[in-house]
Length: 116
Length: 112
Image (tube, rainbow over all chains, first blue to last red):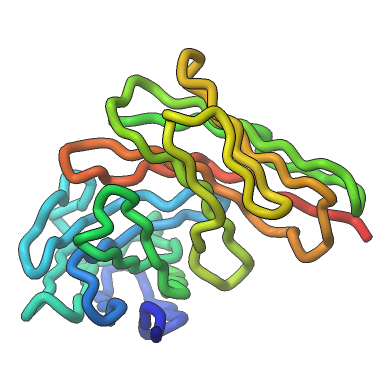
């Protein structure tokens, strides 16, 4: 099966600019996650969707970050305006709803964001 | 917020040696503890996982040892190979939706 697709792979912006990331999960996966991975750290969950509804966004900085998952498939994550500390790799992952007990998550390659 | 403490931060072993990475977690009622492997420029990928009703799980050269009473689990890589050089993350589920909290990672380097 095709893996999780993300674009762009790299993005460089100035602080206070806006940026958007796109994710296409594995076909049939009901659950979609966005993570932030700062260099040298583990992935930190930003938001979790179940189909097109939000399950958990408790760690999403809602004053600048937003995410949506229209029609329960693709998802976009937006940062507006960006800060220097937003420099990180943004990972998208998906998992099967019926496999919820194991919760195996399949990750995309990530988008490396650099904020200057 | 579920915390997972991982050690060591980095590890260097010789080819053929044993690599051991440890994780400790806080109280949890959940039953799934995975290890993920991440190569540079790639997303993490599930390596092996364990349920706490068993004390050990082995898949090829990779073994998880689980100590429920101590709330600890560890990854052992036997006969380590240069191709195993990567960053390894332990994780534990938290919250009603079983969100995974990841450890801080261990960068493993296997010398040829």
